[in-house]
Length: 263
Ligand code: CO8
Image (cartoon, rainbow, N blue to C red; front, side, top):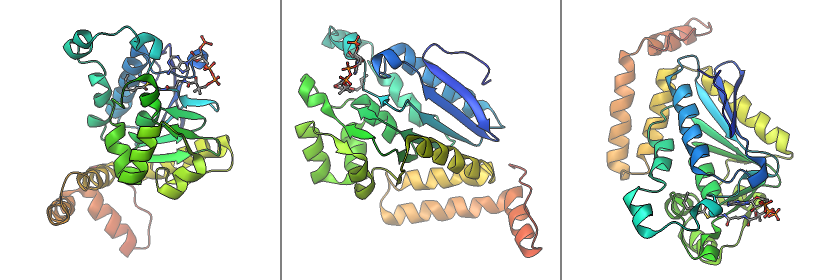
């Protein structure tokens, strides 16, 4: 499934269990035109369907993760075309169907839709020269692919409000301090390699348990603490019906190494 070739993406599996997608539209700093988004959906769906893949890394180039939605493609769009054709609704696909962990490794510009795409990662890693921002205000619009919601959850209301209202950028260092990035690396290569290493580690665990981890952490974004904890407990109980729970706990008791069945 990862053999397909794409116009705007490089897709590979450089480590066992790891799917790797590099945005590859260098002439436009990886601006997210519709064909690129459709390809990204296809590549992510292929990894989702591939049982040998346990985690996915998404990155751009050293210069740009993605400099936003394609402004040239959007500039003449009318309200009726945007609304009538549900412009960018396909973007929301990117997160809703993906049950496997997605790590976004951000070097260079992650602006507008690029920042929004970076924040769709379950884990976000940044290189030293990563630049985040929601500059839509400068174009006379607002974030349209979740930026106002995900940035606010990530860094808090007053910082998100300042960022979105001014259009000012957030440096890698600030992103690390504010918890937008889980880690900030010293070189762009270390950022991508770090993401691949984390993905490989995750891919080495039971896919059933990994899927449940992602599900319950994401629930915390929608549920209050009491319902969230109850939800977590139900899923926890459910895992005692999996083979991998038996395999994992038996291996511990016998001081062995678990061989996951993904069942
Ligand atoms: N769209 C289209 N083309 C772009 C974009 C973009 N977002 N960003 C850069 N490019 C193109 C440039 O036009 C240029 O092309 P050309 O060589 O043909 O002139 C090429 O990429 C290189 O860019 P620059 O020459 O500008 O490179 P610099 O290093 O001088 O500047 C910047 C880099 C600062 C990143 C600059 O390119 C820039 O400001 N880009 C736009 C950033 C921006 O405003 N992003 C937000 C876009 S709006 C958005 O994402 C709304 C999201 C709403 C929901 C999603 C809707 C799909």
